[in-house]
Length: 440
Image (tube, rainbow, N blue to C red; front, side):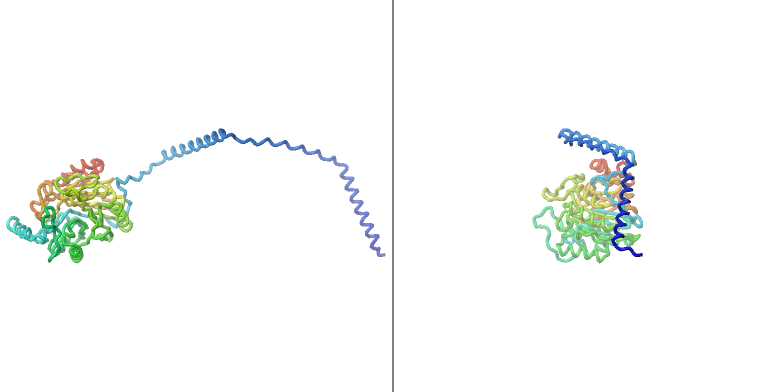
């Protein structure tokens, strides 16, 4: 029989009430839980005094200091790495060459002057009657060939313009200290023939390359280039010079003039050399600066003057800038006398002046102005000077060049290095070999 909806509701209520009564009875048999203890009151927050904060900071500083001391002690026990040397020492980066390259360098070379015709006639006659030779540039340069024969690259200072014909007058009529040199056009080919199977570099950053004016300077550069001589010193870009092994090195020339790369602006010297060092594995800088004459043998770390008013630069400051920029070899000339050589940490080699090499012109060649030298340096595969030697030369008359059996130039350079650079001056042995000062 089907129930009506109302009884079903009543029955559901009865079931629900029964469940509730059973649950209540079960709960009545379990004791009620103990009340939870009341939480302890939080202690009041204490703000540190200023003295206490200072004391805490002091303790923290002391702990950091002890930690730093421990780290320093551990570093001292570790293998020591050599510190980077100062600017006065060698800063050459390690470079890579395919093979070592040998560079032979000399000082001033002048092959006559056709701007002083009276002197030229007298000098040519003397050459014929006293020395039984002509004064052609190739004849004058012939004795130089064996002195540079070991070089892959030969670097010379071309101390004159090259050319012929009319030229503007450089010297005033009443001048007593002005000399103008322009060698004959054949000089360019003669310079190239000094090392016919090697590379010849001519520096024109000096005080005589413009003796025939600006056009004469341009003609000089053009004549040398046509003859196959690499020209440096015409601008501030390094001259790329190839080596027999296929490397390319950079050569830069400087003189104390705003018409050339200026050796007096040492910040610019550093920039020009550093720019070249970024491009070439080896950079050579040549400098035509310093006081002149018999009393100018000492090298000073100060501005040197000529004729009392002409700023001829600071040779040591120049060398520092060139070496910091990355030059492996610095070759000096200009004083007309030999000067000291400096070999820094068996890295960069600096010759402050190689004196008069071959000066056929109205020059005074009294002692020690008649002494010169050819410096030959081997730059190894790392880009550093590994060995070097000096061949002493002597001029018995203007343009009359020969090897000096007494090695007087080497003796002078060694003595001056002891005086001017007692810590870094290069020692020169009896055979002209160079050694760093600290080596026996």
